[in-house]
Length: 202
Ligand SMILES: [Cu+2]
Image 1 (spheres, rainbow, N blue to C red):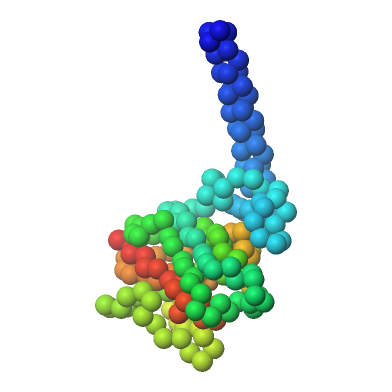
Image 2 (cartoon, rainbow, N blue to C red; image 1 turned 180 degrees about the horizontal axis):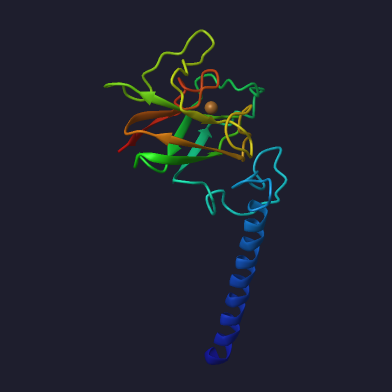
């Protein structure tokens, strides 16, 4: 009995794997399209998602240099209670990177908004003994971006834009000298809500 069933099970597994590989190939095909860059909108996430890419945004990228994957987060159900204006009160937000340190030179940031409202990522230098998170915001709730080395704030595109929508990615490639840097989201009040992390370049 068991010997007869085993080939069937293996066959089913093989079929499942083939299906998975096929869907991954489709996703890569979308990602590799002429104008779409490394990744557009992640399927199924956020109110504007159309679900046409089923793979992970981190699955494939052709970005140059060392690739740092950055995740932008806002927790606490900000879509409820009428707070759809980007202000979350004391709600927690976060920005995390999958590298704490990278070698100097070409560095690409693939920035994915895993939160529920728009975010962005700006690369700022940290001078001397300053640590990430220590900047003071002005009356507009933003910190000074002087010295910025670049930003990813375009939905599904490279460089500066009007913010990365929930469920989408943006990216930017910069050249970094050895030193300390801070990755921040500088939408009003997001920095003070916790959207920063340090990146050391060796
Ligand atoms: Cu933000």
